[in-house]
Length: 223
Image (cartoon, rainbow, N blue to C red):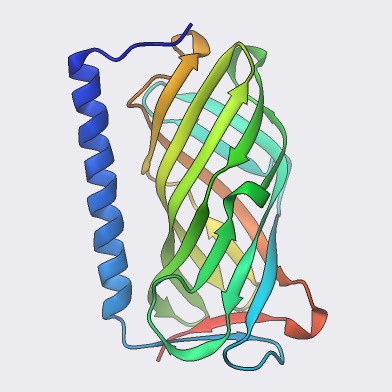
């Protein structure tokens, strides 16, 4: 049975959504303020759009999601995040890379009370850069949008932005998940463990590799 929002909860959800939008705008502005960025992908020529895939790394489960409001945990054993980067210099920090939400994969995902979830990404998620301290670029992924579903038992939507950093030394994109900057909405069921307006965080590490071996490694730098 779908949960209905009361006025106070609806107000909280709207306020949270507005706050996340403002945060994303601030981060994008900071990225734009940085002089220039250079993206290289092996021997790929400037102006080339290179297909990449991020593959999760580390001890299983490799993906961790937390409803920070109710302290409920969801994990996935592994996953991938396909997308593209555009090779070139003199770029702004916005949309240096893109992730295809519908093509992301999330394997063997489980949550509270034995729930088994399927995760479906929606739209294009933008990788934005805001600062650089060799060999690491710090930024965020904007426009994150995904549906999490155990049919008939628990369904919800997750939207917002997450902080990331990328190391040229390891080609690993890290989502540290140290602050709840995601919003939960469209909750159906979930036994009160997950609710509309809850704040959430997500953490994982993705090794980025180009589809064509000659287009590796991927590096991001800023003067």
